[in-house]
Image 1: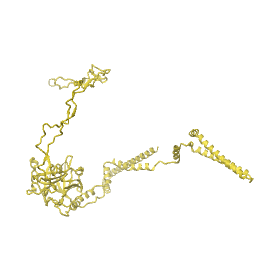
Image 2: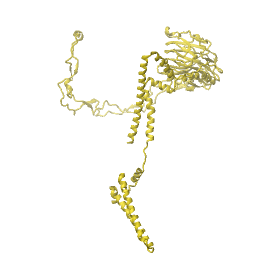
Image 3: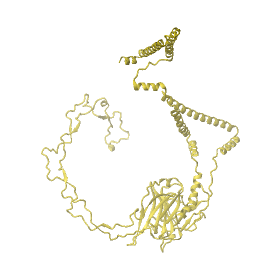
Image 4: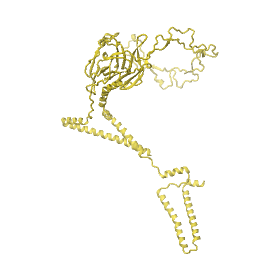
Length: 612
């Protein structure tokens, strides 16, 4: 009963919330009707009212973040914020790609220096890749070449996929310092030392870190790819926000890759690159061949096994069920399908070209009520005597020699480079990209050997941009209200989310079950099983109480009379007083026994207990 009351309270509360919502909705509709009347009366007044409402309902002004171009504060090799609004210091490639069609071989993709679309930081400009399905190539020289010695390398820059990214890259190349380096002829085959940055095509989200390692024995370069990050990179390509990509290489051969100053990949140039920097010390002998008598079979057929005489290889797998009986009512003379009597030959049917026309077949309607039609055949069942073709059992091969492998020989190309960090110096940074998406925004390129300087540059550039984007984003309440304005049913969700927990807490915490003395007494009775009086209503209980009081008064009255009659003489005082006391004690005991007997007689349970 108490649970039902709680459920009723919860349902009443829910109904009250819904009624309030309905009232609010009705009030809004009424206000709309009144506004429509006012609009019909005076259009000018409507415009004034709307302007006032817009002013009143306008969100509070968003705190503005003033843009200030970052300035490098320390030793660096390259710093570019594009805030001059020009491509000064950058060189557009005039070359063509080799081994592809002439129409798409040119690096004719457009580059512009402009602000981001829907920028939250006016005045902040960047380099924008503008063309779809075009080859783009642009590069710039460093202040001085970077040499890998005892200082780390930090490379960082910003990317924003303003319109999303379908298939394309946004990685940078650190172009190797060579005598014939010509930025105007920058192509995909131009030697680079490091390639780093995001790349995506389809559902393959990549974050490249590739360096070209020089073989000390042959002098040839080989690309070494970092392991794939464990982090999920999807959001960085889809949220249309500006992200900071950072690569840190240390002289101890360790590396870190960060996005928005959070490490997403790390490892060692010696252990976490594919293929490994150092080749194996031994290789398989290419001139070693497996002997013709080498036996790789772990199991063979038992050559001593003989097929049993009673093995019947010709026995069929299925046989007719001899115990089957044709169902009653089976129509042997009725076909299962008949020609459609309602079908008509098409008027354009040409028997010379199309052959003799035949009506299409339909299920025989007579067979619908019968177990079956046509000749009855016994169903097929598994043949219990079927064994199939006999094969000798398999046993362990006594001549098994294991899986053959060519022998190992010293690797003639083996070398050990314990300092892969000492890469080829680079003197320029370049973007050589193909993309099926446009408007990719690049900004704030920075190369240094001091991590604190890089972090200061990031704080003054990307940090400012992040603060502006965060200030422009609506708060949680504003987001909820905006969502509810677009989808009004969310108001009900909000109300229920707030109201129901409150109601349930009140119902279940503030309406606890109260304990009473009778309940405790009943529990004690269950434990001891002592005789108990019957439960009576209040009127009967009061009557019995009055009767017991009257009985208790009778001995007192009698006692007072005896005292009056014996109070005349003193000689009899002591003995008679003792006899009176004994008499009173006996009377009280008799009265108590009678009261207990009355209680026991009223209760059937107690009568049984007394009898026992």
